[in-house]
Length: 215
Image 1 (cartoon, rainbow, N blue to C red):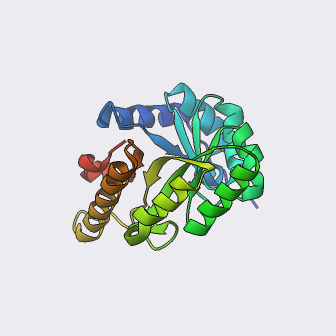
Image 2 (image 1 turned 90 degrees about the horizontal axis):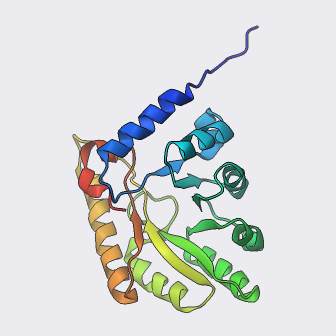
């Protein structure tokens, strides 16, 4: 029986990255998602090609994926979208990895461990604007942000959310999410007095709504 085989042309990957880059505003970064072994395409070779193609931000689901990315992208910013454990903070800090806070309890746990280690951990906060998976509820995001931001141990540098669906023929659902996100982030920046890295768009959303690309 023959085994399945996939050939990945990394030069075409580079062309795709350049095409996306050309379609974006200059000030909008690409956060290159390489979770699940770069969606089965090979985490190490895809990361290396992405770096030489100008990618500066990567996102993964788990810490062990982030450590692999770090091996091949020594100067990149790396986000972990899943819930990293407080006991892994020393590894996270040593490897300059940025966790995404997925709930208030998760953030409090990371903050407590960071304070115990006399460290300040850079993080992003995920807001659930309608996906219903991970993130603090958008209605409570401002108060939760203030709690986490004032408690010490965390340096909240960014805010993100996740579209449940982007359908040009049925725009209401995504438009509700973007309105909620912009309302929340506007309040967060006003109350904290600082700019936050804001990311919401996806490869599908950028095809139809360039105004949603943000940072």
